[in-house]
Image (cartoon, rainbow, N blue to C red; front, top):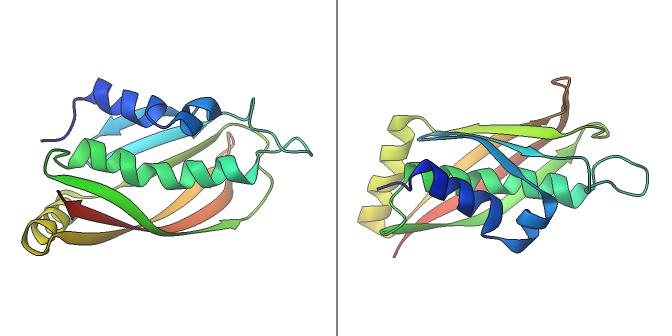
Length: 147
């Protein structure tokens, strides 16, 4: 069974010390849908835009957040196998990312992981600034593994 929303929020925002220091916030945590925000404040680089590592963190965390809201943490755990990030423009505001998995894809992943011991899922995401402009695009490959 997926975690209750407040527990998923706690795990997403505070379980990993690095993520907690960045100030990442989970704005939406629902089965199959998450929206996360990385604040610019505290995450600026030497020219005042968002540090690439903060953007990378924001691109990577949705796979785990979706896991928390969509899969049974007592039966499975996620790992990230690959993540590519393409920068499009400087990020000069807080940045948001939204990730979704539909019910059929969640069922496919869970069924395969149950049968084979693991299942892969891909997330292609767009990181957007306060004005809705894409500042970076990511392509990540995750794997759900059976305990």
